[in-house]
Image (cartoon, rainbow, N blue to C red; front, side):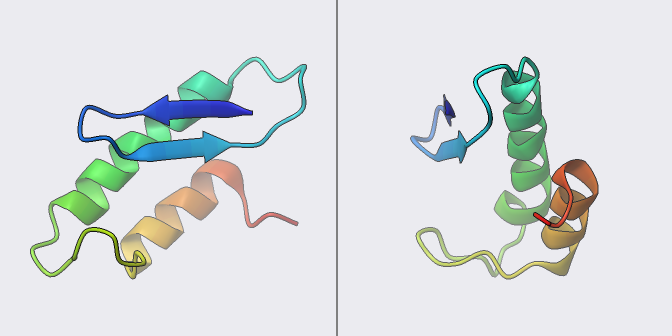
Length: 67
């Protein structure tokens, strides 16, 4: 498990195998996508689910669909 705690106290958690070496880089990229697609959206309310097609598309491209 790898955790990224941002300056705004947002936590990103990535569950991977122990041998995974790129988890930190993946979490950093997730944070960049989150910052760009979610935090710049004036209609997003913090503490609420993320409802952004752009965010979903970019995360799926980064880590896949979970299958």
